[in-house]
Amino acid sequence: MNLEQLRSFVEVARTGHFTRAAANLHLAQPSLSRQIATLEQGLGAELFHRIRGNVSLTAAGESLLPLAKRMLADAETVRHEMQELAGLKRGRVRLGATPTLCISLVAEALAAFHTAYPGIQLHLTEGGSHGLLEGLAEGALDLALITTSDEGGGESSGLERIPLLTEELVVISAAQSPLFGSRTSLTLAQLAKLPQITFHESYDVRAATMRAFGDAGLVPQIVLEGSEMDAVLRCVERGLGVAVVPAMVLADRPSLRSVRLRADGLTRTVSLAHRGDVPLGRAARAMRDLIIDTANVLSAVTPEVDGLVGRASRPTVGTEAS
Image (cartoon, rainbow, N blue to C red; front, side, top):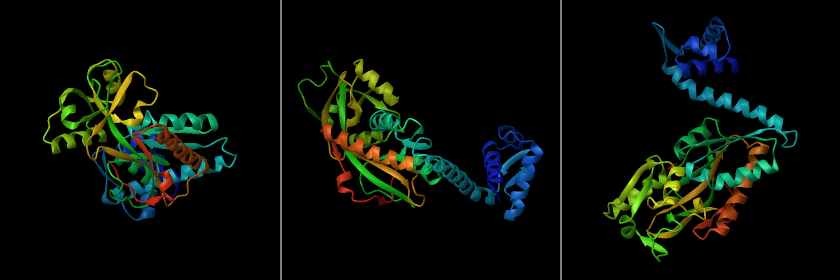
C-alpha cells in the first residue's frame, strides 16, 4: 500500500467514477484500475462494487476511506513540516473557524500572522463547529476555532482544546437608530418587541437566541430571516432592524451601536482545538500562540468578553461542537 494508491482510492470514492477520477489525477484509466486492484489485493478485500458502470464503496471501502484521507493529510503535513525547517520562511497553516469568528478574532490574527511570516501559506476554512472538528480528526485542518454555549460539553477523542474566552451575545442597531432609546441593556421581552434580523439556521448564535425566546414563552418579531453575517450587519447598519451578535463583531464598526442583553445563558465559549496525537508544526505553533495573544488583547478592550487563557494552565483533552 502506498500514497498513490490511497490517493487514487479516495478520488474514485469522491467521484464515484473511474474515468473521471483518472482524468482528475492525470492518469490513464488502466493505470488507475491497476492501482486500485493492487490495493485491494494487498488488503485482501474489495473496496468498490462495480455494477453496470456504477461504482460504490463496499463495507471495507467505507472503513478505509476516513483512514485514507487522514493518512494523505498527515503525509502532506510532514512535507510542509520539512519546509518549515527553513525558519518559518516557507510552510502552511490550515485554520478553521466559525463564521462569526472569521470577521473578528480570525481577521485580527491572520493579519498579524501574515505581517510576521509573509512566506507562510494560509488556508482558512469557514464552517460550523461540528464540521471543523471533523476536519481536524481527518487531518484536513491544523487548528480550529470553535464556539460552544458552555465550557463542559462532550468530548471528541484525540483532540485538545484551549478555552480562550467567553463572550456575551449583545443586541446591535444602527448607530443613529432610535430603537434602543436611552437604554444600555434589554430584556428578552423588550427584544422580542423590536424588529429583528436573524442569522441562517446553521449559526449557533441563532439557535441559542431562539431557544432562549422559546424557554421564555416569547415570539420575536422577525423582519428578515436566514441571512449570513455580512448581510445581517449591513441590514442593521441601514436601519432595517436589530440583531443579536457576539460582542467581538463590533470591533472597528462605528456605524453600529450595541446594548447588553439581560438573559441567562446567552454567552458562548471560544476555544482553539487541534489534534493531540500529532505534534503541531512550527508554523501552526506560531499561529496558535498568536491567536492566544490576540484573544487576550480583545478580551482586555471589550467589556463583554472575558479572557480564559490565564486560567488554563494547559490544553484540556476533548471538545464539543455547537
